[in-house]
Length: 141
Image (cartoon, rainbow, N blue to C red; front, side, top):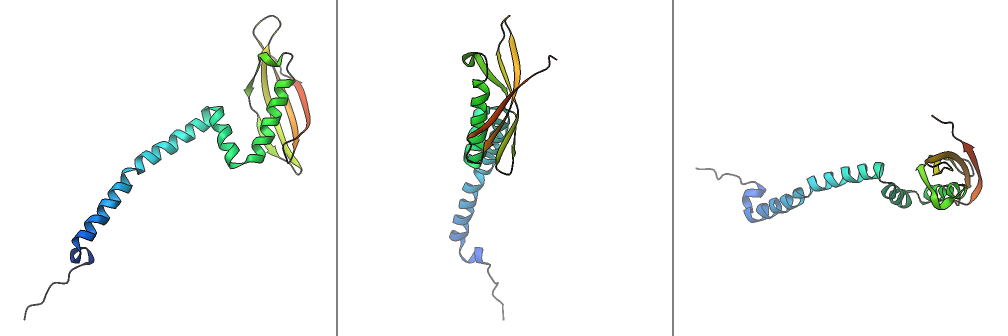
């Protein structure tokens, strides 16, 4: 007596296996693009301030509000805020009752031409409202 070969699930229903393979191929086509998009987003978040701000606004809105408040106050402390820019956004540290933004470097138009820089340290409360901002001189390098 001859035994009948046992068919696997794929062999028993070849059209179902083919459809499943087709679906996997469609899904797997997008994986390289997703990896490339993730790397591009990571690089953009490191290099482009607007992308960094947008990501921080979505991920940590309270930290974003504190940093934004301090950057605005740092620009307001310039002699002529219309001709000032943020050179370095500084570092944001959480405190017990809010945030401390350390080392916001601001460049402003100097009197003899060129750019003069100063540093602002800033404290905000948990809601992002300004508590205190201090302007510090930057030594010439």
